[in-house]
Image (cartoon, rainbow, N blue to C red; front, side):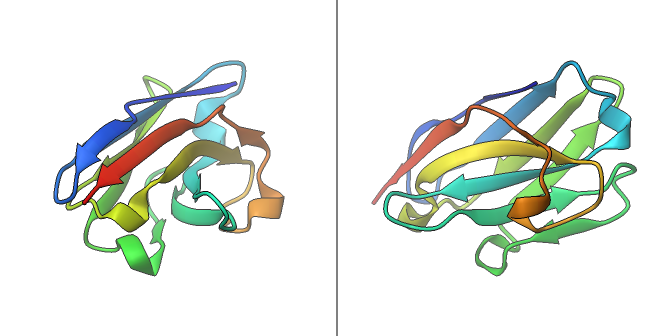
Length: 120
């Protein structure tokens, strides 16, 4: 299971740090990531990180503002979000996959989601 925390309401230009803790899976063998879905929009793969943190992916819209990281000893993954914009408003889901992927259909585990709201 994956459990997110850290969402909330923030003004444009502000920062939030999302956390995700894993249980019931061998965390270090999974690639991790974050997917978001805004109302009326399709899901977007925001960021992904390989098992050893050696490779990271970012959606173009968040490059330079968001940073994904992980701590295999703690079984946690994080998404540091800076310079937030109203367009970043969405439910953010922590996700895990046995392979490194940025394809939503290839994900194996999903968290319950955490709401991020950015006011203008």
